[in-house]
Image 1 (cartoon, helix red, strand yellow):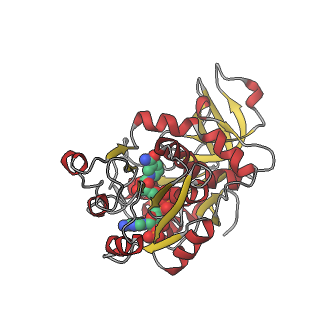
Image 2: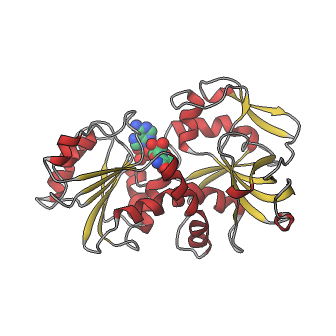
Length: 326
Ligand SMILES: NC(=O)c1ccc[n+]([C@@H]2O[C@H](COP(=O)([O-])OP(=O)(O)OC[C@H]3O[C@@H](n4cnc5c(N)ncnc54)[C@H](OP(=O)(O)O)[C@@H]3O)[C@@H](O)[C@H]2O)c1
């Protein structure tokens, strides 16, 4: 089968299309014939070496894939064979024609939802839902969603009102992404490429405050935002560090303003993300969450997909499809 092997940490060209034997289902596992493989932002960091990979390359890269179950291992219900599902590999092996994964990572794809859409929406929605649940919005609150045009931010923006946001302020980089964030439901968008964007936000708020910040940028801007948050009620939910470092806020920064910071990462958090997967696919199948597919590329163009993501050009998810000719 064709698979994308990461040869070493480095630039996109370390992802190399290679012929290797297809995996077999071990005990507790399924194998799927992959039809759609999402290219995920954190994968670019794992490939570059910025995030720890947890294993030594060379290895078959990739975390998630959607397709049809072709084989089940011992102790797995054989009724799964032939079902359309999305799987999570918990590490490696998803950028391939056949993908082995734990049976407990299987999420069935509802009728009416394509495997491409399921692959594209799964991570964005399954992180957005626990973030919104954790925020526990009252129905009268203002939220700030960072990097709102794509990825998890795009799902947060689409779902915020349903989860009780009264006003949605978004950040996005450049006019195209700002326009997309507006279309997805933001009432107002600020360009986070402007180094003074938090000062712009202060002007736009005109003395009002933000109740909940969904912080994916992290770094020092997180600290700047604290003074724009509602004292004694404001919550910052930190789930990413696009700026290259987590939110630079200390306990005393929070205590002196009566704010809370909730870390939304790590194993327990990922358990909540996993539990949201079925709901996400249902929302997408019902047309209530747009998967925002930017492009479907042949599997052997994985390195090009990573380059596009690093250039920050896509307005949606890039999905790889085995068997598609370039
Ligand atoms: N905690 C969790 O469960 C979890 C799960 C998955 C991902 N994450 C994290 O959440 C964050 C967002 O991930 P995602 O998958 O939603 O990403 P994404 O939206 O698919 O891609 C990243 C977007 O961030 C924006 N951005 C802002 N500052 C950036 C910077 N300095 N470098 C690169 N991009 C920047 C870019 O949009 P503009 O062009 O508009 O700037 C880009 O489109 C990442 O930090 C990721 O590691 C967390």
